[in-house]
Length: 450
Ligand code: NAP
Image 1: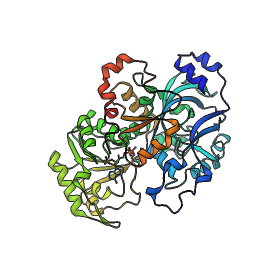
Image 2: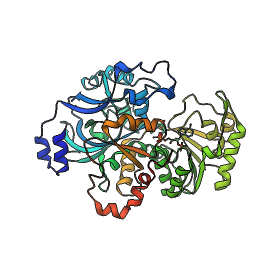
Image 3: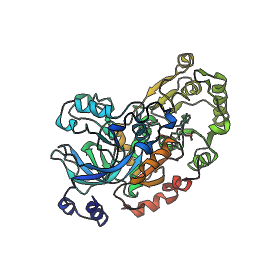
Image 4: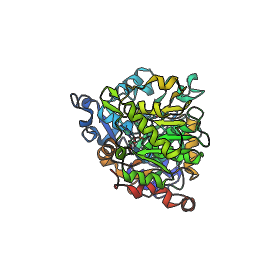
């Protein structure tokens, strides 16, 4: 793939890119089927992504008619790569096997002894399948991870409702942490021209998820003045969520776990900040018993900051926090959940839900339209990347481990074909209008938080 990297850096035309032969193998980050049981008997905290994430050559698959090959310049770490690398809660090879059983030749390609992971990417289209209409070789793109077969009628209202909906690079093979990505044409979006490859690569998964959860009618459809409690407010999802609340005229209450994160959050414009470590909430007395008095203390802290209860709770930590989230939401409020980092067997006191007419609403990634809208806001400089640090693909295990250990801020980028950071900016004028201080906010805090 080096010839492609050199050509892209030199500004090659579509014809020049087409003339470069596709390699038979390419460099990728992958997990191995033979390692599926490597962590058996260990506690979750002892499972180390650095042991299972390998970087090496894998064979180039054949391209389906509705797909493109993207020369991946950069990618990013998402929590789903953490799950893949520690084989929790299930091995992602089970997803690949299920996809393979669905029958088509193209689906069977995904069943391999390796799983190329990664659900974000930016790069350049270098080949298009025969059925691709709206994209061409040479297009600079970002990739969203909603993987649907658009010949299925169930995919044509909200494609997240499609019976065949999958997350690319998690439930499918040939993902973004590689020098080459295999992508359906309906996953492509225009690369924001004012951003570098790694700044452009880090957004799609978390930004689109937060957009659907807060802005879309499929989510909480936040309105002006809504109080929104955001857990993990400087994390991947939370860093975008705070921006959406502020842009939409809401009142964010951000929860973080260190003074430096609190400082970063304030610099984002979030005035109501709760440091959960300093406040030392103990929502659980032991593994099985929650403590309502701690929920009350948390609720009082929110009221002390903004004078009222949250209309919306942006929920993803799961078991640790869900009891508190249900309790503190306003009468009639919405608990918007998309994940369960700390455990998916959730417990909450149902009396607080029904007596106060609250709703728990679920969300998962975003449909193409939502991802496109979220990408458009990035491209206009109205939402900013929350990229803090960038690693080389060879260090993907370290990068993933830092997310696993919650030692990171915002998003962690990964350079694939881009051999250094800050390449790929095509519109420096827009960049200076948007402002380096906004684009680089999370980078300035990198490493100072833990
Ligand atoms: P992240 O970058 O690691 O941020 C999550 C933040 O949540 C952490 O930084 C931490 O912030 C906070 N947190 C973690 N455990 C917590 C706990 N026990 N109690 C309170 N706060 C806790 O991860 P992310 O990218 O935002 O993703 C978060 C979760 O959402 C992951 O499980 C991921 O798999 C999932 N996800 C789902 C979707 C979807 O489409 N369904 C999309 C993206 C992500 P502080 O320590 O500062 O409080």
